[in-house]
Image 1 (cartoon, rainbow, N blue to C red):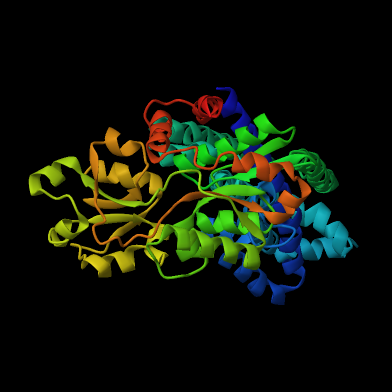
Image 2: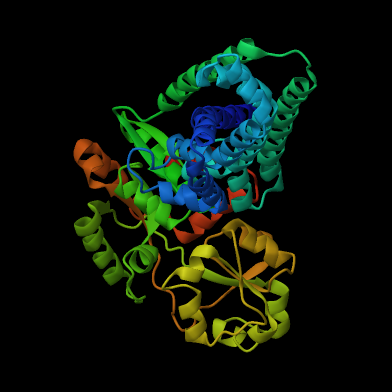
Length: 504
């Protein structure tokens, strides 16, 4: 319950700061284009185009943008502010331009300046429409803020991503329900204010204009304070930032690095887990937004270095280590002791009924099957296109792309018949699934290796020593057991890792 309140607070800060920034930009822009109508079309067009970009794409793009990008709350706030602009600009523009021209003429006849007319006439009359824009923008912001969990921005999206990764509906609801409640409360409260202003018959004049200005000033002030609080959690001297991708094993591996560093050094660790896929983590460690995470050699070799898969684990490790050192100034440590290869998984009952044990044997049945793969698997050199060619796989329809955490659930519920998972996933035995043997050795080796930024290692020379101590300490069976404890026995990641570290 404590963590729910913490994540709810983070969510409110993200939305509050983003809305403050959006209001401070959007309303003045809306006013500007009423004065310069030629600017209306391009400005509204740009704001509308931003709305059409998928939210995860914007979050992913901001990873590589200097100053406002990276991971954490800053890029999340930037993305949310961009999404909130359209209704604010459009409603401000519509509200002011819809005012009866005769009212403006009367105001000018009374000797009002443009500034006086704006604050005493136009804003008071358009305030209801402007608030409707604020209302829509706030609801949009609350919903999209859940995506911030994918780039370490915190908020209620953390529960949703963890729930998807572990096929845990309770965690998904723990993020979705509070988010929905926040959106409904915000919508109701702003709607109530909007309704009051529409029904009020008393002219607000200068008082309303000053109130709006004061509200914006107060909002900016509160936003600045809240944003300073978000920056206060930025890693300080003596703090190591450890990241992870967005599935159970990666979170466990990130926690292993974190607890090893905390146990063996006097350094503090800032955990930035659930950072999405390979590219997000790679860009983050390369840019120094995180100091280290655990990658798989085959993934680094084929996805990042864009090399064709090869079966020799020593050669893959050598080439990855050399290339990462020269191209990215990243240090690859020796394997933690296990390999997590792609696992082509089907239901146990289908394997027994058809007497299928290998991918070659399964290939003759795939024309009657439906398949589901993660988004990244569709694009990788060692992913679906090469696999289909190597085994001659053909399916009843184009394989479905879905989030990694949903694959096993879709398979067990017969929405698909074959998926690409991970060989150490603890959920495989729980759902009575079976891994098909890669009898043609298509997949390259995927040894789990810690990757750290070289500047961090130079700054903290004790780090290489403690990270190297983990070399060869975790077997594939041990990793699957850890995954099982978290996924199926509902133990906390911190708890299972603590027991592991103590046993090493």
